[in-house]
Image (cartoon, rainbow, N blue to C red; front, side, top):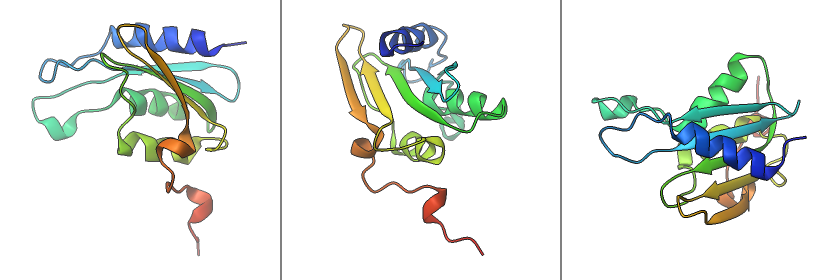
Length: 134
């Protein structure tokens, strides 16, 4: 069984693969899916900045592209322990099993760790259950 420490370590390792020559802000992410598998990603920057991809969404897209549609925890490693951006948080809402129980851990280079619930980081986020489909 994967622990939060294992997930944090996977995010730290993924951060080492980040490509951030413009901002210098390296980010690694690791997602624990509902089957117990871990999906990692790093941020990738491009000279055309709007094309950049966050580490969190890289890991999420890898998970989804392999057919997995749910996760329960995510860890993010950055220089300063920053939390995910709004775009990533809203993307998490799409596949989080329960936003009120989904754990989001952050870790800084100095080892400072924080844990949140997804719903605390994006209190008014919405998911597909909130959309009326016709």
